[in-house]
Length: 116
Length: 112
Image 1 (cartoon, helix red, strand yellow):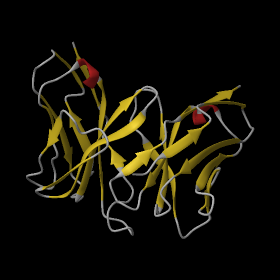
Image 2 (spheres, each protein chain N blue to C red):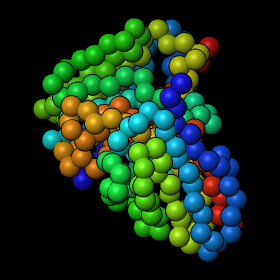
Image 3 (cartoon, rainbow over the protein chains, first blue to last red):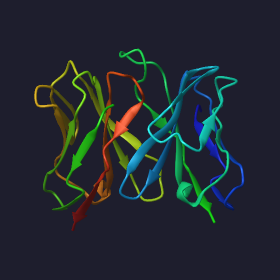
Image 4 (cartoon, rainbow over the protein chains, first blue to last red):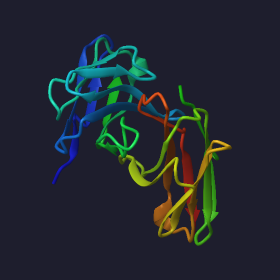
């Protein structure tokens, strides 16, 4: 069955280290998204991509980067991890909908990241 | 950009009663409004969505209404059951197409 996966599911790192979170989907969706979820803030958009080699900044993109070299993967990199980046990270994917940009988004299982 | 406000943050109802969660949005060009349910430690799961050309949509015990003039939309759950206990998020797709903007969530508690 087609699905969306994230790895690792849990990660503990130290301040200043570079961290990469993986997201892989087998639906062949063009659109992929990264969100972070924090208590009291809901889900906030970090970066998104509407196709190979396309990347865009979301609401909370500072300190994060993404690259899209194929349809299936959108890895999220924290260049120099900070304690403020301790969070649960969700990846999502969708096909372009009636709006032409995005439609129903399906979420991965999440990665819990702790920065000490 | 889009801004979505969601109320209440916590809602407690008796099993069998109805629950209503309300959201407002700021971008009049927004055209897609999904609702997600998230159980503790799990991923958000889409439960229902509505587009701007429709005023109401139902799926069994769940319904969503949209008032474009007032820029608000609501989730209605009837005959609530214990398994409805979760956090519910509304979202809107703004006219600028910068991905979904989510409300901060409503913790729905079903009292036995």
